[in-house]
Image (cartoon, rainbow, N blue to C red):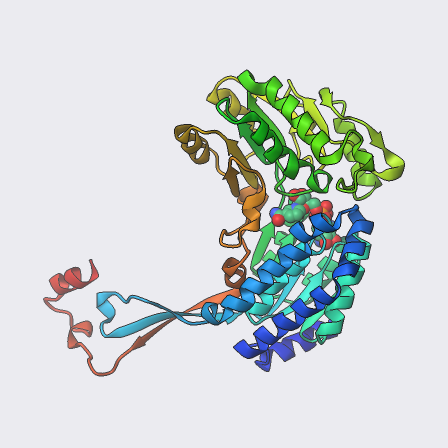
Length: 454
Ligand code: NAD
């Protein structure tokens, strides 16, 4: 772990601390990403058959929106935040100073292999840390282009790019070096391994995990609009999106109409044969393809269902589910198969939702404010949308993260800066007054303390 100790030494010189240094690094990173735009598109097309447009919205453009915001706001974010002081401490001033954590580790998955590694990096640099970056080995073309960008811009003692099989390299890193924070995005199963590795040395973690995100549709909606707003995020990146609507709970009064409109939307988006569309992605590898194919027998196929293993293609599929105990309703789908379950009453729908607690996201479609409030308060979940799906994560003014099984902590925008900072609380007490009442002997002062403490 010579390289990691060198990073620690570099961090301790204080070189990464100044505002100027941080802004310069962010600007250098941004310039390198812009200069490599075509290479990023080529890599993401190779790994996941993403179109340039989809890449811009969800990968490099997403990253640019975040980095532009950080460059613009960092001067404000780093300023100590003055807070009020309680009467007991009069005369004092209190403030919170953000300080970098040290050497942090960022681990990312394969589904948005550029954005999910590079966006946390913005927060880590902005907060003044040294960073070890570990991408997913399952998106090798993107891994190569990020490596090239990072190594062309940064010294290894500041930002270190490591690659390899996660099951080997991550424990090796975490067992031999005490990181100051680990930021992990990926499955809940591996998230538990990371949490255990971190616990040994009390290393703080952010866990951005998966989950089974429900999408609820009441019978008072504009069905055509709702269908489009569900179909787009569900089938974007062939459903391999952590915040994709996992399954649909639709009021029985409009189920058939909604299914017809989702089919229409799919034909509008990808044509009659989605395999020929340049806007429809592919499954990452054979293992995931085989896992997903099994779900196709868990219900009645209402649309789609075609597969081509030679092309890792699974058609956008709508599948009617009448038995919520089947495997398709037990785990996150993470693919282009949308189970549709109808409900009659709120209680029926809630019973199904409770089978998979603490989803990463939840979406409610209704025009009725009372129903909207009822859904938003009845279910604990990470974050979500009303009359929309998945887009909440593109607003960097909202903290993004899960709860329970779907994660721990959050990031995006200022929240990323906060995640990678320690909040140092300082009280500065003035010397022009020193109340004798605060010092013993305290005889007869109980009523005074009651008055000033509360
Ligand atoms: P994964 O957990 O298999 O891999 C993620 C990372 O962990 C990779 O870098 C991998 O190399 C590493 N890894 C794998 N096995 C490991 C082990 N035993 N020990 C240590 N590290 C290991 O996840 P994935 O399949 O790449 O991604 C899919 C999952 O990620 C889905 O569950 C999805 O919902 C979730 N996800 C969550 C978010 C979010 O923001 N919350 C975003 C994208 C994906």
